[in-house]
Amino acid sequence: MIKHIGTNSIETIRLILRRFRPEDTFDMYKNWASDMETLKYLSWGPHSDVNVTHRRILSWVENYKNPNVYNWAIYLKSDNQVIGSISVEMSNDKDKSCEVGYCIGKSFWGREIVAEALRAVMHYLFFEVGYKKIIAKHDVKNIASGRVMQKVGMHYEKTIRNVGRRRDGSLYDVAMYVKYNE
Image (cartoon, rainbow, N blue to C red; front, side, top):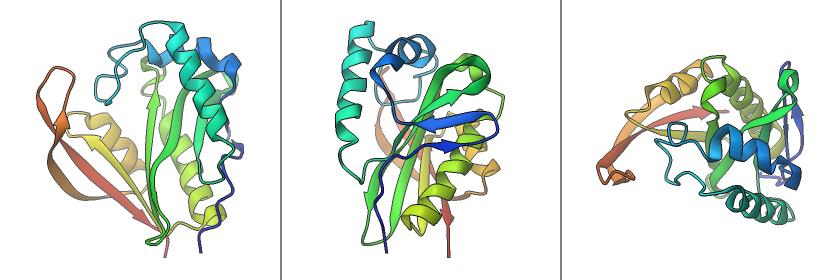
């Protein structure tokens, strides 16, 4: 049975995964929300200014009232700043499945931070919330994101063709990975 408990803090060796706060606005804007390269494969584009980021965070803070919202800021302890996000994008309580998504600023790429965050979130979603299946998808051109999914024990399931259009207008496919807790 799914037991929705909301976004509670999770601590790992290097990270604190916690709820976003209004004071995270500058970190989010600086570290990833304003950077075209970081957001290259995401459906939303760079924020035009810090006020857009602030409004986004305020809406997330408001959404935390709902116990089935799971949206963590990735706080890097050594740098004392928020460097990315990881969240449940879609949930199906009947099937006990959810889909996760993540984003981290490019200056933090290649340090296995996302894998550390994703492992912790998957453990939380499996053992605290009760999901039995976790899905993650990536644009097939975003090979590094697929490697993160593999590192945490997710298995390639299929490629879904022509999912949508990138900001440059080109069609894209996504690779879907799955991990089961049985």
